Length: 499
Ligand code: BES
Ligand code: MN
Ligand code: ZN
Image (cartoon, rainbow, N blue to C red):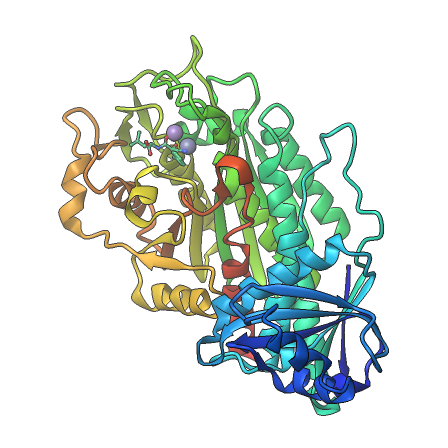
């Protein structure tokens, strides 16, 4: 799909399909008004006949419109004009693309970018529209023997803008949106792949490919034997039970000044989580292929940054392993020494994410990071706390937390902060090691965050628990590609602050 912008007036256009907004109740948007005049009241006649109220998400496809150079007009309900906010705009943008894709339209001209969206400028309206469109069009059929193909697919969407002076910000919005969408699709692909295909070595190959594709990117892979030798005992305790060798994968993007401190993103990459000896129940276990969603989001972020060619240094770091039950797997009660030297009693082998992450978080000290953000499908408890809407945010640094909250507001890729106060640390007490990897049922996401906090004292750090937001279950089962929009925005904001 290709996206363009064009300045002009809605009544002077030629297109396969012209998209016009209608507000609740039966109110023509200014662009629809112009077309109504051109077509001698054809649109207002339709509204009067009661076919279109303008309720949010309602659509009506019209053909053979008198006096119009457009083959079709798609009327789109935008809800109450005063309530037309980002969330509604995104909903409508997704809906439009799905409808168009099922018609014979190959090129569409969208006038909704001309509507007022509460608090948003043109750059954002175009970015949101394109990201929402690509999100809605995504499909994963690479493993089906017959691919579903649309007969005459939509190829081109043009957004109408008021004046040529707005072209530069519009072009920038298109570039950014396409780069972020590419990253997000990459994340979805990796996450949707099953554990028998997407194992740690597969992830390492993907990183190598990224380094081939982008000059500013290079890759370093640490294998399990090196990690064992180095003293990453927590990581190895998880990986050792699998026939698939674990890997730590560093993707180094050096787009900035040579000596500028990098932003470091660390992803949990459990390519399948059985729970290990503390085996998970069978129902729904297939979804634990998504336990590398954090790693997948780091891959997507690196792709989006490289596509935007951003002048900044970013390290994407992935701790990739498979958590299996086996005769050589860790047992509950085992005590291991982490790369930091701290010892951990493994009370539950299913709390493996924090074990692979803690060694990764120690290892990345070598980059002398500006900030560190880890992304992990870490706890089922975060779903109990926040549901599937918000990612859990924990941090040892208020400005960094605010920076993330700000990017989350901008992208609507939502986060909500949870505390990691000292009070909670007592839940990790162990009689036999420095602490355990299990905090019990109360505040399960927070005690997981507290565990990680014991390894991140040397830098500004935030943790994103994406267990509730990385994928959808049920009939719509599939990766969401979150939080790639959030992470990309954090980096973009850093870049624009510097320039
Ligand atoms: N990968 C899971 C977390 C998870 C569970 C994500 C369900 C999404 C849905 C993680 O490794 C895990 O098993 N966590 C345990 C921790 C517990 C043993 C302290 C959990 O959440 O039950
Ligand atoms: Mn687990
Ligand atoms: Zn896990």
